[in-house]
Image 1 (cartoon, rainbow, N blue to C red):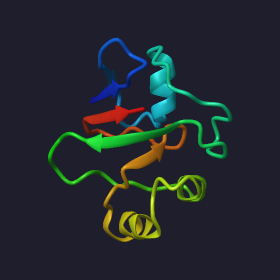
Image 2 (spheres, rainbow, N blue to C red):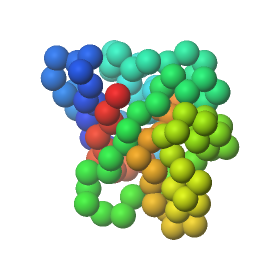
Image 3 (cartoon, one colour):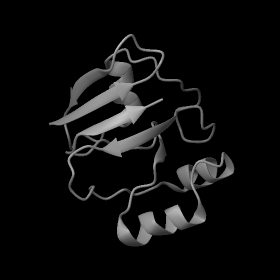
Amino acid sequence: MANVTFSSPRLKKDVTVYAVAGDTKTLLAVAKQHDIPLNFECENGECGSCQVQVTVLSGKAPYGVALTEKEKTVLRFAGKITAEQIAAAETGDVPPPWRLACQFVVRHEDILVQF
């Protein structure tokens, strides 16, 4: 199980939900399942409306961060991540601060999601 804490001015208070790691649910699917008011439109990584800032809370090295090609393009175009952050994610498993909720697969690690 992973604790996923959603934090936003749109919420009265932070909301922590449990997600089953390994069932390949995206962060957007988890948010929708728990009625978290996360913005989204296309749900396939092309519009960028579901940009979120993800922080791993475990204090350990994060699990593989596999950015999709769509994420790289959309987040780079939006100015949310740099070429250096993409390279660090690909070669050193160092997660960038911003992800697309529709592309980010929840792993077995506690995370904070800010939007």
